[in-house]
Length: 139
Ligand SMILES: [Zn+2]
Image (cartoon, rainbow, N blue to C red; front, top):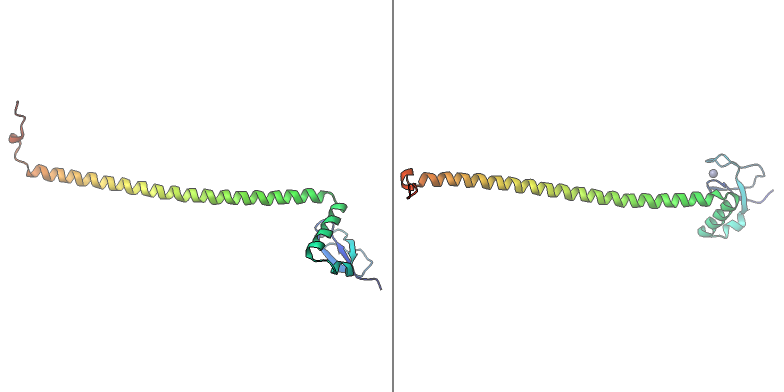
């Protein structure tokens, strides 16, 4: 019986263990998986070492992996940057709304004061002596 081996997909990096000599197909990509190493050797590696071994083999097998990886990390950095931008825009919109509310409130207060002032003027006119006492002395 054949020893247990580790097989990986050169496209997506998924790996599996198998004793079979038959072709193993990646369930995601639908392509043949490649033998990576003996299961016993793979078990001596920690997670980081396993990932490194996989990535090294993937890059050797398919050089486009490095450019796809870079595209992906750049995309992630880009969407992180646009998330920050979105947060900043939302903050500005909220501040703008608050300022607009303040302006409306101040506008209303000014109108109220003008109306009160007019009312006081009318009241004052009612308490002034009749018009002929207020005539210009020169006329
Ligand atoms: Zn795959």
